[in-house]
Length: 53
Image 1 (cartoon, rainbow, N blue to C red):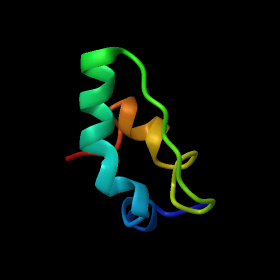
Image 2 (image 1 turned 120 degrees about the vertical axis):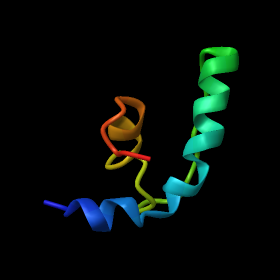
Image 3 (image 1 turned 135 degrees about the vertical axis):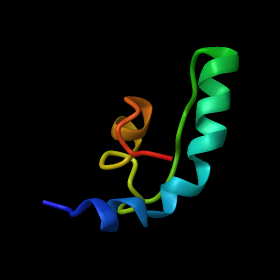
Image 4 (image 1 turned 60 degrees about the vertical axis):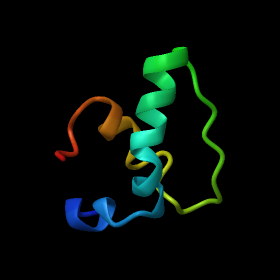
């Protein structure tokens, strides 16, 4: 299992604010990124508000 500190360093973290904006504005978004960037690990936690600031 990935530790929290390692998860927060995943590359997808840099696009989370834009993902939030897209979901707030349009209600939907498509996130495309290579394997290993954190789409499955970090994005669900971020959308649930569980990753902190």
